[in-house]
Length: 217
Image (cartoon, rainbow, N blue to C red):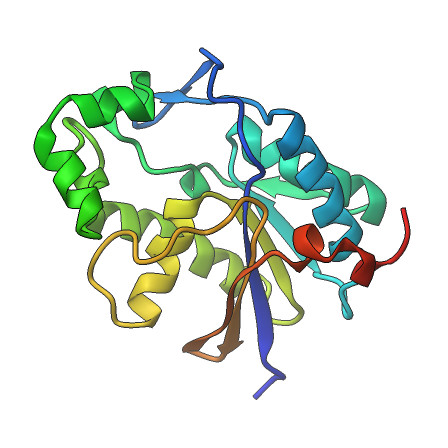
């Protein structure tokens, strides 16, 4: 058996949620904001960390949505590595909620607020949105296809918070859609050993909290 691989899953930087930009996807018109100024700085600090990974990832994959593409761009440029875009790594489609702000979503139904207060997931309640089994199948299929194509060497995927939950949840035997809230540009790692997957680390943002650990600017 070959040596274990590491699969790094990264959430995008902070997005500009004042944006009104959308993108047409196979699932429908999807909210597609760019990064805001904080998000761009987070991406820069992430890149400074990633170029110091030993060994370097052999492949880098990304969601097609702009906030993910802008997050990986500084690292790809610094490392001189091509980024492969996979549509099935895009964020969950939330139907009628795609056009609403978070505040507007909460205003649609008092039950949604109560669910948040009680640590219950809300995204599966989106009218016309993707259902969890189909979403997990989409994300899992995309990640596993990438791993099968490159069975040797570490891999980096830049995507979205719900995408990371969709892949990691089944590994931990968790049925609900959103068991943790990945921070922007957080590094989450999975050990891949043949058919076995095990979580190594979740929600690591040392590059944001302790940037000096990764060298000077």
